[in-house]
Each structure stands twice: as structure tokens, then as C-alpha cells.
Image (cartoon, rainbow, N blue to C red; front, side):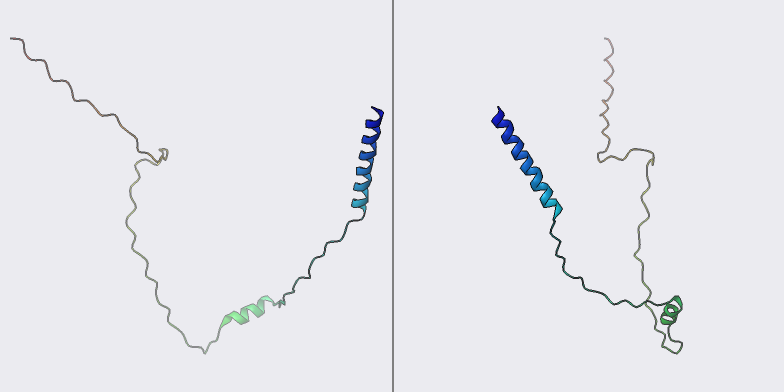
Length: 104
């Protein structure tokens, strides 16, 4: 029993020491350098000057877009009803039984 306790204590102590040593000296991550992007910062007045356009430029006619003709919407029976995939099944009504023949 003492041998098992001693072996367990030594193994647990070794695991704790190994964990402390490995956490104390981590290796740095090697990340590749990222590419930079050139960006020009402009003011609002510069943007409005760029998008203003040219007064002496030619005017181009734009083609009018023709909208598709859409049918009239189908009427809704009752908007408060629950939506279901299956239609409600109504039981077939039996015709009334024929009247009994008159007594002779």
C-alpha cells in the first residue's frame, strides 16, 4: 500500500512539475507579416468635387425600365386563420333516407 501511494505521489508531482515548466516558457507564435494597403483620406468637399460631374459634358439618355405586369393579388379568405399545409377535410354528408312507403 505504501508503494502505491509513493508511486502515485511521484507521478502526480512529476506531472505538475512538467506542466509548470511547459507553461513557464511558451514558444512564441510565428506569424507571417501582413501586406499593407495604401489608403487615401479625403475630405467631404473633395468627395463632392469629384462626384459633381462636368457641366460641359454630353448628356446621355437612359433607357426606361419596363416593369413586368403583375396579376391582381388573390383574395384571402380569413387572415386570422392558422396557416396549414393541408386543406381541411370535411366529412361527406349522407343523403336523407327515403321516406317509408305508405301503408296499404
